[in-house]
Image 1 (cartoon, helix red, strand yellow):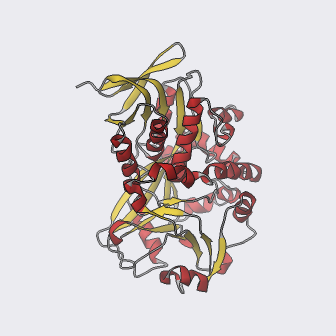
Image 2 (image 1 turned 90 degrees about the horizontal axis):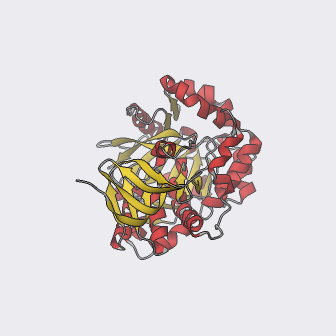
Image 3 (image 1 turned 180 degrees about the vertical axis):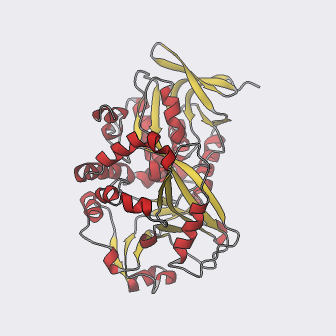
Length: 423
């Protein structure tokens, strides 16, 4: 049966947190909006992450990331895995990644990230007010914890970036951490506490609750894969789908790691790669965590999850979008967390892999599509999509309205990648 519908004001391609937030922002401006989603809304990276809305604006690529890469790739317990058979495909992206790890670039990128992340949760407030999403949000901050005081250099480059951008944090010792949570007592020598961090006990439910509010207010959701576009006179007229198509006045590509394929249908390209994030959900951990904690020494994050469970996250793999999952990685993640909490129970654990859309400079693409005045781009948020979903949607709405954007979008334009010609 064809899914061809009557024309909408906007079609948003992608039902993750960025797509849903963008659809809500556009709907609030009085537009009729349809979301096109290839799978279950909120079930990819938007629903499988550490669940934190933070302004800690460190980019993925840093000067020590490149120098430490050989060690990371040799370390059998490394939080980063690279599938070497995919190296020919990944090489151009990795070259750009290395160029963006220079200190001068990392400082600029960090500032650009902060311009979005510092506004990230505030942009959600009008979207979640009065909805069930409020019930899965907490505002008690998060902790980066180090077992050894020597592991945290307060004069390091990451700490310089935090101070440069005005990130709010507190350096805490063992006694201060014990006051935050009894589970932290005696485990760590030093930590960084970020008091402004909000977090959700269930990012999938958070996304799907916002989607339900969108539908309740008249929005449509079409479960089908976008396969291409019809165009005429410098405008996209219709998105083609696997079972029909939808016409609209405007379109937004917010399809996460699948955005690159769609952009190519419009004659443009972007160095968008796939970071495959791994995690484990423990339904009966035997410990009651009240607070998210990043176990910095072992690269593992623990977040309280629904019904008394916990979620572990923190391992990444660079590989092709369609490569099979390597579920030995989340099991390794559990072993890492048990180095700090050996009593952690993993009976009944569920292991998962989800795909994140990552640019080589850690910045999203928020822009109008080249040569098509009625099509907008909102993808490439990497690890920070949950935090930046609502502010991204606000900026897309402002671009569509022709209004002055709340944040300068120049750093997020697609044309920035042309500066590295030939790569």
